Length: 164
Length: 307
Image (cartoon, rainbow over all chains, first blue to last red; front, side):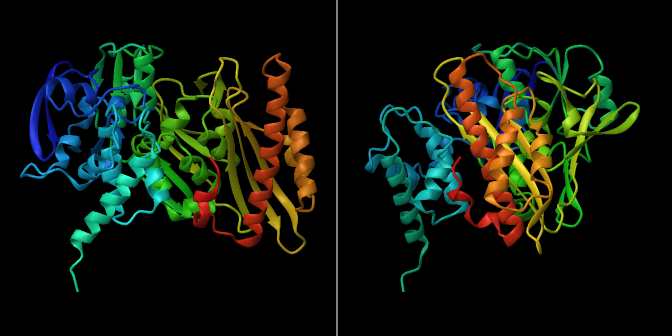
């Protein structure tokens, strides 16, 4: 198996790309599919900047061979916005809390946090810290990020609740 | 670190026979979760010519866990499946603790239990926990299946008992005794210099006679100081038959530390290693015994255990 046309399900759309077996998912997403929101930093599974969701579960796209991701439902940071182009509550909260500085870790943080909020709409601060424990931020510090995620969680659950 | 992987051939066979035929030549590697192999290929430490995926082979995804029957984990089973299983958390607590403390947590979503064992990295936690739990691996080759105890699985630095083109198809552990429990702990520090001691881990499995409060059976394992986790037979025999008290565990811990051979000729590193091992062995024995005694449920307060 050498060069082949691979089909990816990314952010609800079916995309095709010519890939070789040695290509990593992060490179295919960025260079072939143009989804440059996903970042490539340590490329060894330590920093979490390359986090994407595969079937709703956060994985490191830098340690995943692209050919092995074909039958999975992928979500990148570009997939967080809704069909009208409105930002996800997490992204809005990150802006209002100034939770990104250089922004390199932000895409990974958002993906890890969205996986948490999908699984647990009312996380505690400990849950949030645990969910982003695989994502390193080297400039902002984690306080604002944790606050932003908690804030977004509140906003999302408030929006769902029916007023009495 | 290389930016791009070296090209290789990639195959996704659907049967075990086919996989073994494809992997028979030189330079072939199996891939299950891929965390370790892809990282090795990026670093240039692994240069396979041919990568054979196990992901489409039927029958390798079996997972069953029952306190009366035992643990049975197929080669494709992700670590997160074990991390989320209540019986693993209750009765195979050492394994649960080792998986729970994995860093980064993404690895549990990508990697497999069997793959973690097969990469034979000396400082990994899960082999230590599984050795305390007396696990056994099933290796399937062209001539049939064979069972290898995890103690005999590691044959040298980075080497395992797997002879190509064999596949480790599953891992099994016996059911724990009714009055038995296990515990795992590690001390982990960032490595600042190349010769720093950065990690040491320990696991124990203890069976108690609950009426007389005497230890009737014990396994003590220390990892991250040899090429594989090591069972300390001297400490096991010292604690077996002894009353289940802290004094017995402290004594067993000092016997365990004496049994460890020095890894370096740097005195302070050996000193720190001995102190860490002493604390860890004492703690895992005490924790395992207290769980065995109290039918304590470790799943309830796992988040308070320090990593």
